[in-house]
Amino acid sequence: MLDLLFDWQAAFSMGTDVAVYLIMALTGTTFFVLRLLLALFFGADTDVDPDISHDAGSDSSFGFFSLLSILAFFMGSGWMGLTCRVDWDMNGLASAAAAAAFGFGMMMLASGLMFTARKLNRTIDYDLNTAVGRTARVYMTIPKQGAGRGQVEVDVSGRRKVLEAISNGEKLDQFSSVRVVEVRDDQTLVVESAD
Image (tube, rainbow, N blue to C red):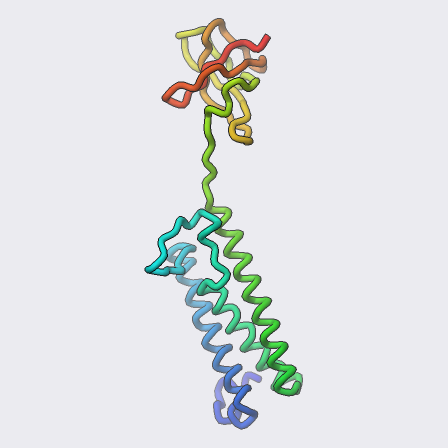
């Protein structure tokens, strides 16, 4: 099969479909590798569509027909079609079916990997006001009111967070249970003893 890379006449003599598979394989592989190099050196989100602006971290920005997935289809179907026709001596229809199925599989794999990579980039916002009324655990001792800050461990928007806190009364020792009563503008929680 490697002979065909250097002998285009041999590829055309084996049939038009062999030449098409060879062109698809070489073109798809070349641009796929260039796309990966661009992603490696210039950032992961190099699929640029000038008409659509989107947030790279949102699920709505994910597209099944991205540049990477289309290149993966051409690369996979080209190499599979070429292998079926040259190495496995399959007929044209069976080769086309195998090439299309393998190309579609490569497209799904590339799309799935890009979707997963974009999910890793996503930042999750949380609302501190969801902590009000919740019971928390003192992580670092909180001095009495007006004497300084400590830290509490509390669930905020479904996530366990360690946040700065002040007491609205007495000193609160480490590992004691407290209740969140207020959130200040500087993102500090005001807590009181839960006992």
